[in-house]
Length: 159
Image (cartoon, rainbow, N blue to C red; front, side, top):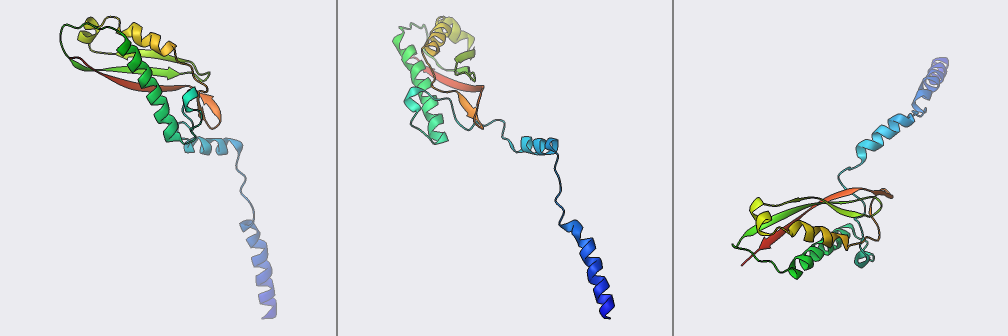
């Protein structure tokens, strides 16, 4: 009986060693698993204007970025003397990109054709207003500067 317990414990000892072995993961497998965990449509830090440098919370950075862009466009449009033949309530959609070096540009301006004929200088005014902006830092993802794209709607009302 003693010998059977002894041999059984030795057998259990040698066969249980496989439970203590660590599984080696290849770098490719680790890389693929890490890629699955990354949220590709989200950034860690929004582009920063000089007025937003003290903000550390992501939502505050986003709000400051959007508000700075919106107020810049609003001031530029308000400075113009627009004459229109008919009243309208319309939305202009701006497709804006920020490069990883911090350069802002408008990729596309989407507006109704009637609005384009009523306000032919609209594209020029919007493009020149964004040229007056400069960023302190681009957007970051995991500590790396990245290119980003934003869509900004501008609602126009005439009376």
